[in-house]
Image (tube, rainbow, N blue to C red; front, side, top):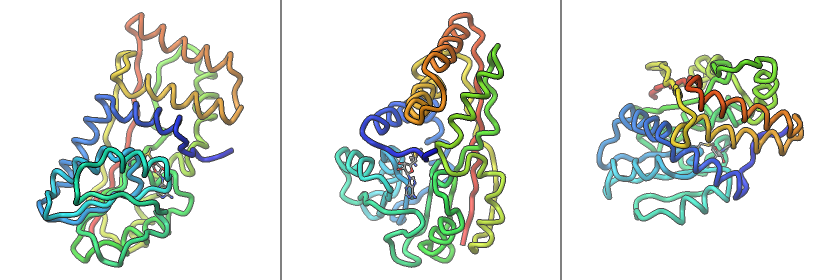
Length: 258
Ligand SMILES: C[S@@+](CC[C@H](N)C(=O)[O-])C[C@H]1O[C@@H](n2cnc3c(N)ncnc32)[C@H](O)[C@@H]1O
């Protein structure tokens, strides 16, 4: 089974999910934690649609520099096309072989990317290499074991979640990341949780959007039949209509320094 790749259709589904109120709030939380200052040089590893890079560029201003690196040329093109800041740029690159100089950034961030990268050790080593001594980093990853999604058909929900797990290389990465960060040389300054909780089946919420994203991936893999996928979606929609919808998921945030 394959890790998610981002063609135009997948990029569009990802972007519509990233524009939900939930993920906007998550970006605000990440930005607060990063506390970027004017003039800082910032690297966003796996910058995706570039929505956070834009906010980073606003925070560091023209005396600073923001660089977004992503494996997917589709993502890099889409992010570049909507960029209006001279001090923000995007480039194609792999988190495990960053096309950046040693000790060249004050801040390195990577949000929901590390779980997609098979070689976590190299990812950590590369993030450490490009960070200046005294620099800080933030890595956020989803732990798919933390999903609590109300259903009256738990075995179907389990089959759907199991079929979705291979969309990334490490579905439970947060549970094993701390020693790998320390091995790379980082000091781990804090580990915390950012929870997404949805009580409504509503397009501005993360999980209803993610249902489409998940269904797209699972359909592509052919690991569940369409009737089952549709029944899963229909139940969630009905629970929403009855006011009984509940979804929660935790992201884990690792704040590190060099
Ligand atoms: C879920 S998206 C997160 C995007 C962005 N960080 C955000 O939070 O808006 C994951 C991104 O990681 C990128 N990615 C996956 N593997 C990568 C790798 N080895 N190196 C760099 N980027 C990678 C994907 O192309 C995708 O854009």
